[in-house]
Image 1 (cartoon, rainbow, N blue to C red):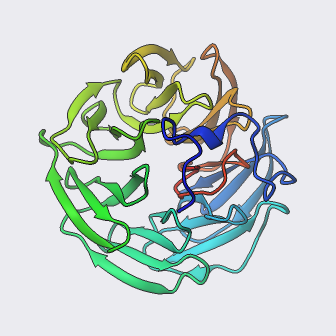
Image 2: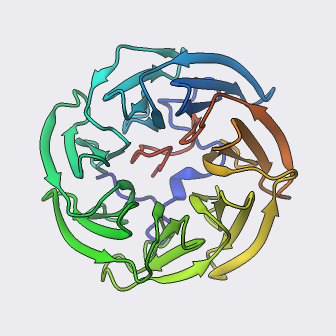
Length: 338
């Protein structure tokens, strides 16, 4: 694994406009998977216009940058395939057969892809280039979907949406080494992010209306910080000072300050909405979020919380990728960069 640039901030490589040479010539775009339309809407962030619609496999869930930053993988969950998109041209390539790819991550050394096979109840380690299966790890929980890695990359924490559980997985051994049930009934954990100093993990929960906070090293019992109804996505600012939390059930975005260790702001979308998953622009000035139940996208000013644009897309937009983004390599999902 390439070492982090700053042991006190694992997001140090994600500063504004700090693009890798591998992506510096890619056009700036927002790629939106429309889960119920089986398409990807491509948005020009300068004009806030949809410039292309790409047909893909059935039920695309997330768009995931590859470890080497050269490919965007569309997770066609019910289509049992990964559709590659070339970010230089915006053209789709031939789909690769992969069973139940709800979400996709990459080990920090770039060797393996990790498919979150939610319905299959498996974590499937595959060759990061060929996507051939290396090891399928059965899990006892239901609905594996999101994850993030420790600062040294030795383990990752996984959320299990439908059974309200968390897993701790040894990256090298490809084995589950920790398993716990969240301390409330009827919860549904979602997105996972690690703090800049690597000491805490945050897990959004759409039924608990907040995010769980726990120590990843000890895998201790987590505490719940209420943020808003339907907390779903977690996105770190370019300065590593704040984290944006999309509250899908109430049309708001909460802002968490890492230094203060608390929520400092809440932005409300005018006329409501269903902010789901997203990403931060290359310069850090715009937070992009999909409107899951409104067939639309939101562009939000990260300085003021003002809505800059509301853009119509296909039905059921979810795990969009803002691309390119700063960083040396991708750990997957809609853009976890180190």
